[in-house]
Image 1 (spheres, rainbow, N blue to C red):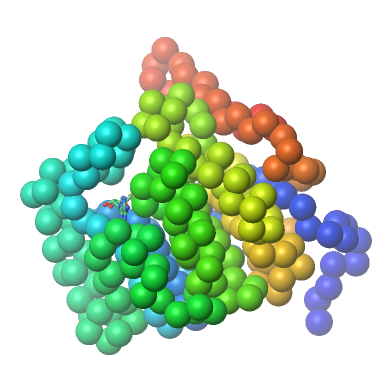
Image 2: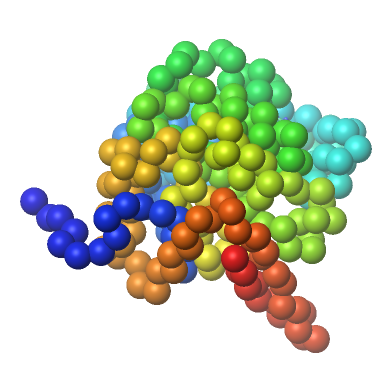
Length: 251
Ligand SMILES: C[S@@+](CC[C@H](N)C(=O)[O-])C[C@H]1O[C@@H](n2cnc3c(N)ncnc32)[C@H](O)[C@@H]1O
């Protein structure tokens, strides 16, 4: 059996120069999964293809939200647009819904979470309302429903100017959740405009170890960040006069 002969003995936090679609190829396969915040189901499709979940819960409100902070979120939309999105998701996954592989759970994400048993999910992807309070609430709600070695994956770990303008509080919510729950941040995607993070209950949890083993073996140019939670995290935009943009992670 393959083993790491030399390298990190304990897993800390690593930035992998990949995008989230690549990260998803390394997540546990054939498991019970939730995507929290679905929009039109573009990522759901990718999850079905690369992670082949035995069950994928698609959790979304699919309603226009007038909440002062969320109103600024680019994913918010008119009631008509939300209906179009929901109908599109139903149509797109009609076959998988009929077979029971995909389940649509429409409602506020933290309330939907209550309907799942404990010890249920292999991994969840948190990508609904991005304000500090909402992300922290979702992390608590879905973290409580994970299997012992389950993973929390989440989107938009960024505090670039655009994220601040949209009132995102993902970075602070993730840090707070890790401090209070004991979950540890193990991975961050470095090539995204909107980085994706992975949290594990313990860095030596089985699924975290399998994930890190595969990433260490496959991805080149990995950067380790020690004591990640104690450091300032900045995700800065570099904007050029021809509208091209790039992003720099500073820790
Ligand atoms: C950023 S989009 C999701 C994008 C999708 N994960 C993807 O990568 O293609 C956010 C979605 O979360 C939903 N949403 C926002 N707040 C929510 C809440 N409190 N409960 C459930 N869904 C919510 C919105 O309706 C929207 O469709």
